[in-house]
Image 1 (cartoon, rainbow, N blue to C red):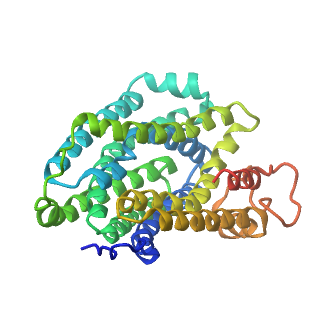
Image 2: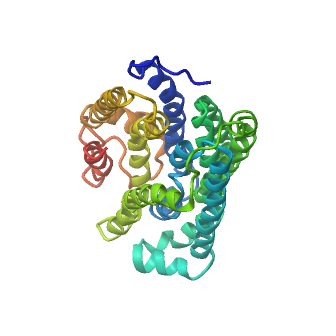
Length: 379
């Protein structure tokens, strides 16, 4: 059970850190998923096309479809204080997750896909059909994440944030199994291997979260005294809608970015590189993303604001400095040019021209280094 600080004392930094680090570890592991997927896709047939299809279509559209359910973790953490509130939020999760999954199916399996991808995003024609296959295989994504984030919020609410990290390890283990099999076979398109891996991973984590939350609900949530006044649908929506709109607006950058890149020079190569840069940037951002749940869980503790704000300032400064260090020093060359160099078999993608280092032929654009440098100021 969570300890309560003595009356008159500020919320200890140690408690903030102990709540944050398992979530940060979980988000950091999830952040590693995209670079690993990119590495495997790039070692399989037609890497340029499949990387562009994943980054420019599947990743962008799947994120925007799931954006309304991302904040279910924050809502569950903040509001699931008693059995009645838990049931209300759970019903909302089931309806919203099912509705967003229906939208995903509508895009992936009907002619609406071509309207979105060809007419709105305007992506290169080579990646249209691979992207549709990927969207079809990603169908379980949205509902699995809705269910998982709802359960994780309950666990965080009752002081079991370390359990979230276990679920992430299970997810990445499932990812790794599918990616390894796909890589060893060697003939399956990268978009198929990657989306199957992601779908398998989120389903595995959702199943685990459903099992892990049961004793928490039974032994801690159900015996909790009813909140007064009871949570109403109106009160819940007034809390949740602004959060959902925030994530929607933020994630709109992904499809907008795909549409913009598709209308620029060398769109195929740029879309192929984009998930590589995005994956690295998100690894740094993930430490701050995890802090959102910490604030939701601890802000109601008396005298918590000052130290929560202090920790946030430290965290923001450290993560921004780390990303800027990566972008502005030879570390970027080491990451992309040494660690990932063997990954990029396609000659048209930049490899060692990613940061300070030897001059490379002019035919290889500075796409990755420029993108990483810009992203360091957007973190």
